[in-house]
Length: 331
Image (tube, rainbow, N blue to C red):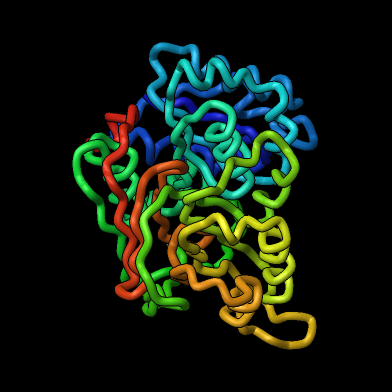
């Protein structure tokens, strides 16, 4: 059974038609769900105040029926919830938490504070609320990576056959599948191969963790960052923070997500590759770009803290066995 938690945007309240569709899609896939107490509420900023949202998480962690926690959607207000989370309970319950975007803050904090492997992956309204349900690539990867298979064998990740970043306004325009683009290749920016542990997340959200106890030690990490609706100049600014903090000297590889609805820099450039090269400042770590784990569809599920190998030469990521407690997703 999956617990649905709304730690950020009050999307279930704002988009009831899409939320109903996501519940139907989860049921059709064989998932019983439990809604957190504030799941459908709207406080004006989020579903509820930060302390209440943390209590919602605690209730799902303590509910013996709940096997894993699926966040409903992203937003901007997960960060204030973190100081109210009982990290000891998170550690003891050891239940997988799945989300992306603003939920990056919770995923990284769970690793830093509780040593828990979580999942940067699809969310209830965002993916199960799509017309027709989650994309097959998304669902297959979610089941492989978050299910029992992940504890047994290596899982090789490769690019999908198509992708999209078309924007359909929820509950107004999202009653059809989104139009796709055929060229979904991943690309080598800096060749090489490296093994380490994965640290995937939304770059703007990750930046809010600097200087806090919720920022993991990145030593040995394959850093995976994705962006949305920004230009290469903004990416330079985000990556410069990592470089100035000396963190690019500790990582073993870099994966950059496919950019969602990118824009030109103030000066007109659309060269995101150059922005990445500039930020790395001569460091020769393997770099793979245009990987499908950001706000575009379809998407990968990546274990935050899971062991992996990046092969930038062959545009491939291999996930090595890790323990998963989310068993019924393989059905």
